Length: 424
Image 1: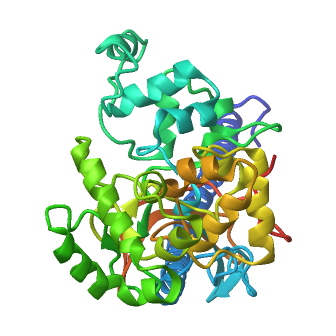
Image 2: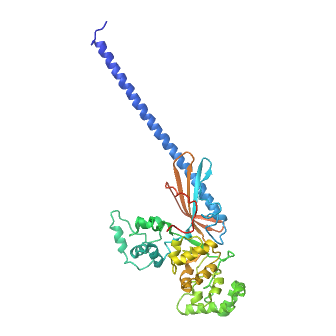
Image 3: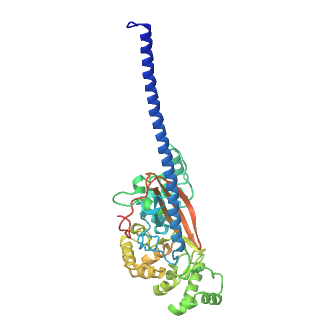
């Protein structure tokens, strides 16, 4: 029998202590490995959820593009299939496979094109002369508002220096890089919506008549003789004049063209000149304005769709005000505008109607070709989601993607009762 404290007992104690340490170490390793495996599994699951969310968002994007493709391009309103006032709004969770998607479409022509807006419109948007000058300098449209190079020196002296683009804005978020544009101005406050909700970087609308044909450019015949002008315009618009207007309208349009060119102008530069230069009455203009244009090509840029624009956007248009914008909203709530002629009729019936018509008519439309699509996808059991944002342009038989991006930011919750105006 061994005595207490013998070498054999001491060896047994050491072995026991080592065994305890070994078991503890194995336990720690097991816990660590389990935690690592769990993290890997969660990361793998999250990655899978994100990938599935991306494909679900792609499905929403495809659905929105299809709705725009088959939508009637003759006139665009908030009650169209893509709009918030549709009979079956698309901005609701839609089940697909093991997940869901939500998609929201906004008419880009219901916003101010920040790359086309003039000083007056930008001043009304920002309510700040310095910010307006900085925006014009950033896009460098030759405004002459700031001293050349002054803004570049400011940006170069920042702690993280950069240079102004000296070109068109690529995204609305780029406004945050412009001197004086604060987060409150861009994102909005309780009192007023932000620039983010009021502007776009590109908006095109179809420059076509109610039958979908290219409009007649009023300057097409500026180098023709009066008899040739009368013959050609009769071929193109003769039936319109016979139905709605006295035939002397031909002579008035031609005389206005002659007057403008003799005055050193390149011809008609605004539809408002049908009144000021040609001297047509408002009734004739209302019947004619959907068939003629001063814009080149089959699309026009920067025009605001009065059927889809929020009140705050319409209020900053030249010649407009909150009162005028409210009149427009009240009219479209009863019946959306189906033609530019209906807009002429409404504007000329307002207080100071001739002035409002003259300043606003060349900045508005009832048709849209540019749209913003936001689509969010997520899985039924996962928490990850993906949001795709695309600026698209609708053309005959195709919807082209102008710009697309993705993010982890969710879409705002859908409104149960869509409204016609932005929050005030």
